[in-house]
Length: 327
Image 1 (cartoon, helix red, strand yellow):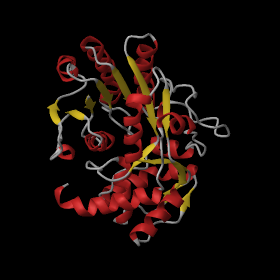
Image 2: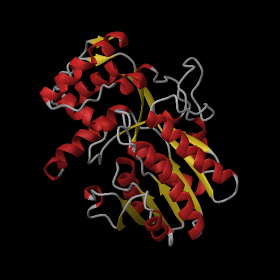
Image 3: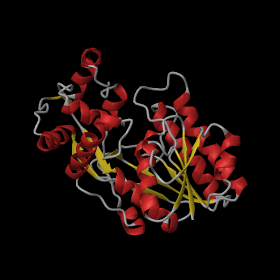
């Protein structure tokens, strides 16, 4: 069986390629610009964008299943419109090409940010309502892209399902991701203080394995929440300290103070050359990070498993140390 992966050079995409190869699949990988994460892998490489409809038709024409991982993640709004365009027109183009070329199934990678976090006192599952244009652009774009896919699946235009990971963490984080960048900044002592709140973290390898299970087991038109375990930023930083033996911040600022200090945090980041991981959008996500994400459906139907966060953090640092010269 040949599997096509868009966004193959991203964190989930490249780990997915590795797991698919290990499972005996033939893999065709679409990457946008940087193929570093795919070097030395036994895949067919294709350079291009999900915004190029003609190229997508060529890319998917010999694929049995297409896994759409292509997206732009943003905690800084959408100043040039690329976030919304990529995350909405991209899925639409993938759908059009796959239907035209007779692809059997699509698995679409969405996000827990596509749906409302509130109310926080009720379990967070697959039935949450979608974010709207009144919400942050990234969240709304993921909601829109997901709904385009599900509509086509439910109308019988093509078979497919949607997976919604929470915050993904772990090794083979080449670019690195927002969380990978934060881990490196913790290690370099570039983060002086912590915001309150937290989020649900899931290992990238567990996400990839559950996506592979969805090839055969994912039910048409269904959504699967691929979450892990909730941690406050304070407990997350404590784990980082435990793994690295480096002192991490323990002081936590309440949200109202964090918002007031954002300009200073941004200025400090520029001085220290640290990524601005604490923005208004990031703080909102931490403030509304749901402590009870219910992945029972994914565990039951896809065999979704979640390794401990300490293992994910340990393996990230070990991988980065072993590969830092080539990044």
